Length: 232
Ligand code: AMP
Image 1: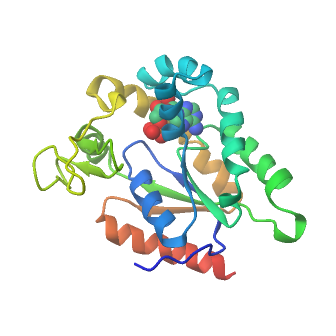
Image 2: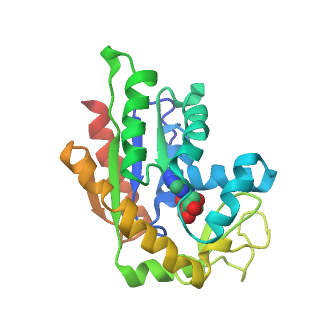
């Protein structure tokens, strides 16, 4: 699919439980529109890998499947959103996850990124998935440590068992995709993130879609939503 470089899409927020396919869809959107995908989970895992102060604080919390405290994230997210590649738009994947984070994001966008003539609130896309599907998606998820391609041993297995189709690297499972951690992550979603849908609904920004479908079908629907938004 052709890349539509620097198309004015504005901020997009992907909402949905862990395993709903936010990362998969966000990567496709990033490629299609030429804007960055910003995953707070990926940024945090990078801090953990590098052993930064933030990484050390976040590691144990993430291993338990709980949410990292809001105030630890804001500096990291602000720094990333101030980078020039975010000017035409960006896709937030995994942020905001609490009502406080959503309020912080609105204030940040208002204050720092958009002048009055170009005010642009986020489009919020909520991926809705059946609970048993989610469990299969999470327990089956594997990714390539080299190129980041995501597979699922139940739904989208690699051609050769456990090896990346693109570069042959041995696929890995995220630590927090283990069965015992998943329950905690889903509970955190139900209690803290699900109410966010109401926050955005009340502001007329929420678009919900059925994500129990083929990846390409969902992608086409999302492109349609964003194209009509960008044309406004
Ligand atoms: P993810 O890759 O989005 O599933 O995130 C992995 C883990 O990183 C989560 O289970 C949380 O511990 C942490 N995390 C990522 N994004 C956030 C956020 N917006 N707020 C709090 N914790 C987060």
